[in-house]
Length: 196
Image (cartoon, rainbow, N blue to C red; front, top):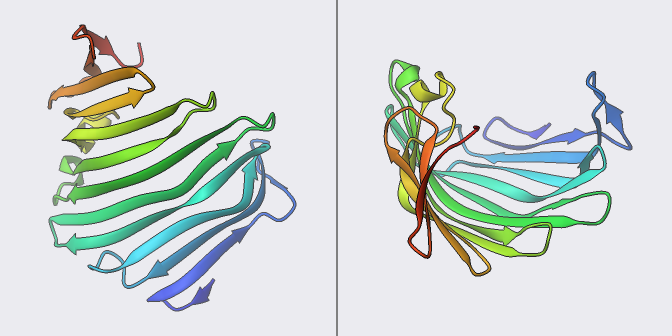
């Protein structure tokens, strides 16, 4: 670590290879940079992968989180991912770029905390097909639902376009379930339980 509590850089260097107790081998470095006091407006931190790989799979890109607003009950952050890329040992790769806003609603009882997320993402899958994701209605994650095993949003709508395919995903009205409603561009609608 270099710098101070207010501004600095933390580098996690795995060198030419480091194997953990589960047999995963990591190489390269992860660099974390921070600016400003934690969770104060204007503060920011980023994570960058430098020649980093795990079990031969290479990760690239920089993820940055900037605090826009902060109170005792709400923290609002802008989140970006630039140059996101994963490359497999056989040369296949996928890319991803993200621009989103994240609102963390905080409560004295943390079990009642919520995350509200909206924004866009785009990139390409390992087969070369591009995709675009747009959150049409903010996605809401409830911590109380996560405690019941529901880790997907419980409310909100997102639109996914991949080539000529278009799909709208509706996460419902806030009920703690893994059920989503999928609507194809031809108007066909199906209900689907995630994880089944």
